Amino acid sequence: MNPLSHYLRTHLVGAAAGIELAARGRQQLDPAARAMMTELRDELESEQRDLREFARRTDTTIPTVGMTLAQVGERLGRLKPNGSLTRRTPLTDLVDLEAMRDAVAGKIAGWQALIAAGDERLDTARLEELLELAERQHDRLTEAHARAAHRALSWRQPPPR
Image (tube, rainbow, N blue to C red; front, top):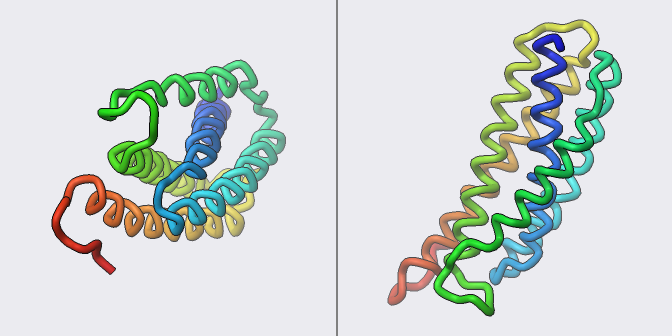
């Protein structure tokens, strides 16, 4: 398999896991974070369609088994200890936002790499749009992360605005 196809397949698997993680964000305790994660999930699904189109243009097969395993792996990741076995805690929100922010940072690097590749089969203008969107997503996640960190780790101070 050529390096570009392998790279696209890797990011398709990551996109599947990211969509699952964003879907879990609908359980965030903070209503603003819940709304942001719902919007983010919609954006991720749209981006996954773009990735699939890039795969089609480059004759890359879609890694359906890998994508399914990524989804299962993300679900198994929910079994982490958070101090409560029966309910969601502020610490769960914090860790989930960290994971999502890290995933989006990886996606930013992916869009940058695809732009740098300069492959004529890839729509560079669309890649640049996707990069800008991912940077905005990262900013929103960073803000939500700061609020979640305060809720989870600071017990006596009002949250930052």
